[in-house]
Image (cartoon, rainbow, N blue to C red; front, side):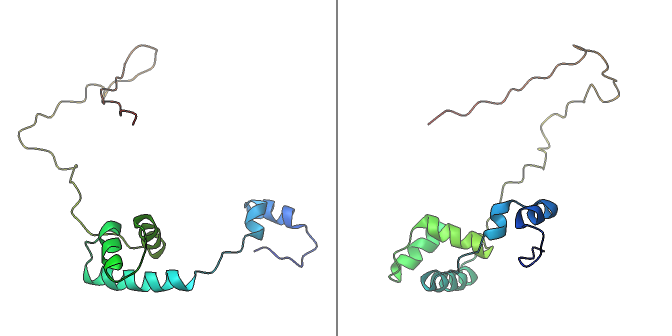
Length: 128
């Protein structure tokens, strides 16, 4: 993709490819031995307990003598592409007793200002 021996400057090559100039010089750092050992153990634990998240895995690793934090375990899990398996809420299924209201603007053409209005009735989040 980027040829360092080409007569075209690296800056121009990066522009043509569509990446930033900094990405041309980026060299990914190798993963350390400690992290590799942790990732191997996290993978083993995840196979045994697929429902365990970063907090539970952190506690299991601490029981084995590894001093590691929840966020680091979560980062390693993301890097490995694993996540805890659990039931997620099914918000797509409608409740049989709830009324379904018709969409009144379905066949209506909106072609002038103030012909249709919208409103947001969601509750804003409180700042912590």
